[in-house]
Image (cartoon, rainbow, N blue to C red; front, side):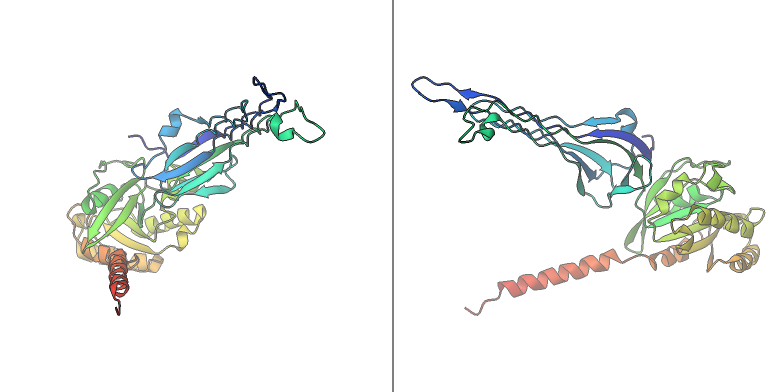
Length: 352
C-alpha cells in the first residue's frame, strides 16, 4: 500500500428538498384545501476515525464528496424523506485543515471519533404550512436550503509514543527492525526510508508504538533532501530517540545538525525529551564510543546510550529508559479492573 499523508478534497452537504404545492381533491369531500408537505433534510458530511487505516491514499483517487439532497414534499401532507449522511472514513491521527492550511478544523485522535463537519440543508416548507384564516388556498412554497460546500486539506499525523530520527544512514531501519516486527528496507545508501514506518515494541511486558521517519539533513527546513514534511508524524510523541552513526565523521556535528532542523521546524519538537543513541557499536570499540559520548554530552545531550541495531547490543538499557517516559497502561488497566470488581461486590451486598 502506498503512503500518503496529505490530500485536498472537496466537500458538499446535501441540499434540502423543496416543499410541495398540492391541493386536496377527494370524492364526496365538499371543501378541499392545501396539503403540500415539506421537503426532506439533506445529508450531512460526517468524518469518522476508523481502525485499520494508516494512509490517505484513498483520497488520491476520490477528491469530491457530495451528500445526497433530501426528497421533495408530496401531496397528502407527506414530508419528503431525509437523505442519508455521507460518512467519510479517515485514519486515526488525521487533521482537517482549512483550504489555506492556516486553521485546524478537526482533529481525530481516537478510534470511533465522529465529527459532523457540514450540515445538510433543511427541507423547504410546503403550501400546507402557509395556510391561514385569510389565505385559505396558498400557492407559495419554499425551496430547500442549499447544502454547505468547501475545499479542505486532510493531513495525517501518525500516533506514536516514541519517535526515531537521525541523519540518513544512521541505521534507523535496522534499529526498528531489531526492536519491532517491522520489515523496513535496509540499504547501504542514503534515504533508504522514504516514508514513515510504524512498529510495536514489546519490552518487559509493556508495549508502545515506535515511528521511524526519513533521515534529516542540513537544510531540510528549506526543502533539501526529503525535507522536513514528515516531522509532523512525531509531533505527538512523548520522547524521541536520536540515532547517531558511531562510524560517522563527526557524531557531535550530526547531533547539532538534526537539532537545528528540529528548532527550525518548531511545533515544540526541540523541547521534547530526547534519548541519544550511538548506533553501530558493532563497527567500533567501547573506548571510541566513550569518547564520542563525552563529545555529545558537551554538545547538549542529556544522556548517551551505545547500541547496535544489527546485534541488539545495548537495546535493553535504551528501552528501559524509554519506558520511563511512557505511562504504564497495564497498571492503569489493572487498577481500573480492581475498582470495577470492588464496585460489583459492593453493589451485590444487601442487608435483607
